[in-house]
Image (cartoon, rainbow, N blue to C red):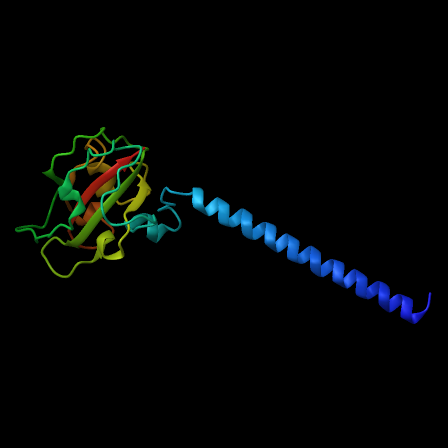
Length: 193
């Protein structure tokens, strides 16, 4: 085989390889694009690391407004849950036990340990101060299993038994929290499944 024939063969093979790469990339693009349109639910974990498991923080990707899903029939959430709560500090202390106060009565199904629950929440130190953490400030609710040791004990003990659609104030003693101080959460239960 002459040098000219060899170069021609290499050029043809290079061109075919380039076309093949283009076709594969086009297929991948269309598969990924069509798969992304079908995904309407928030992707969520809450279990990535020990720190994340101990600290409630969002992992979902929906808007901050209450979004009903399988755990809450459409229209069953109170309009109050679409408004960010104003969390006021507690009085007295230090806390010796978990105190759960229902601020908005939910009418949805009862949350059970082991379910995956979607929340909006706001956290301040119990005695007051700046907001420590908030799903509202990030514009996305937080989704995690409840009652299985992936969240702070105050949430695992205080949320099962409550109804979807509830807004709760959780006053969590340091022993059931992740910080060395008492905490106050206002938690909206948006869905459970």
